[in-house]
Length: 323
Image (cartoon, rainbow, N blue to C red; front, top):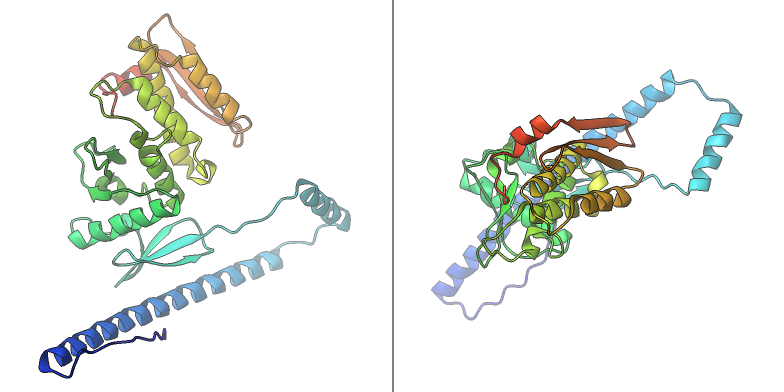
């Protein structure tokens, strides 16, 4: 049980003042019930994860032969020379109203403590106003952790593939698409934070831009390039990384095809390759002044994503610069 002290000052012992006192006590009692419920749920969850981890380690130890001493010494020496530190991943737990509860060393997910237990954001019912309110609070909390302020929201968008959008009005509200939330686009809190950077960063995000009505593909390509340079980009999911890098190249190529010369394609690609040296490399080839093909090489996994010029044309022929 969580015990809190409360100081309540009464003006007098009148009927109205005693009625106010009863309302205050009722509110404290309700909050105590919610806190106790959240604490109990957290204890059960943490206990379950701890048991699972211990059993996993035990089974692994039973089925693994001990390596030779020379190999153990060599491995220890390698780790020491590289000064590597093992950091456990963590998850973040929120209440059903969107109030931050606890950060635990278990994965990189956002978990919501509902009446039916802990749920991912993708498992919530966005047809309910309570859900959109709670998730808005969660997004705002994650943004605050990154040092971002301003307005945030959740709504269903006409373009289902849009993950988030920054409104062009004075508030510059960042809205997350409930359709994409339902598909799991922000279950990983590193993915959510990378999206917040894309929309809200005041150096290379959409909030750094001034709505003028003359938005170009090169402008949006620069935002995607900035997203790939965000802190913890490599900790986000591989899907998020692929989407950001592909989004950058598609808009950069579209900018060149449209004759936009504010930012040269080769300079942007060189900037990307230098920044991500050892992690990613982009190679491309232009056919005249039209569309190019390009390949994104993942140097850590030795995999690649290739786009032929016909596929690129189909991907972006109908896109607007702000899409």
